[in-house]
Length: 224
Image (tube, rainbow, N blue to C red):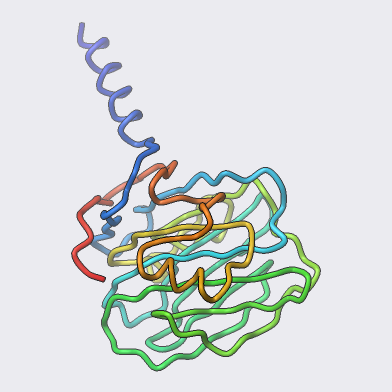
């Protein structure tokens, strides 16, 4: 009987760790620094990415560098990495190549971020709170690999692991959407205001397939 109860408990924990649900109006809260706590997202992705748009909201009072979105493939580190270096400075990595973007911002404050990149030109755009930053170029002609590990809360130094507590995220993340195309300026502004003109076909916060590990809590979004 004891073994049966243990099995039922283990299955319940496993089912609780995996979910495919509507998180509209909610956020993942990462309450403390950690080298383990994270969320893994499973995308709808069948072919390499030659372009993408990624949008999400984040709220943190961290002054040290930290990861916001980490996408690794087998044998390919930092295929896509959105990283905050310090207040007013963000970096984007595509295929291990990095560009930085600078913006005047109030710290700490809630932030809406959209990132776009297209292989044909290599042009990357970074939007913060509806403001487009200076365009940068990287990895022209590159294709982002499929079958990724996509992690929130940590920066991957290997496929799905090798986390560093000093790069961990502490705060809240929500409204995360990703497309396999570059959205127009009008579409990006629509996403910021809570709507989208094109259904998210890679990651959809309203139908998210995710796995939560460690101390991560889902709470209502109470900031804009």
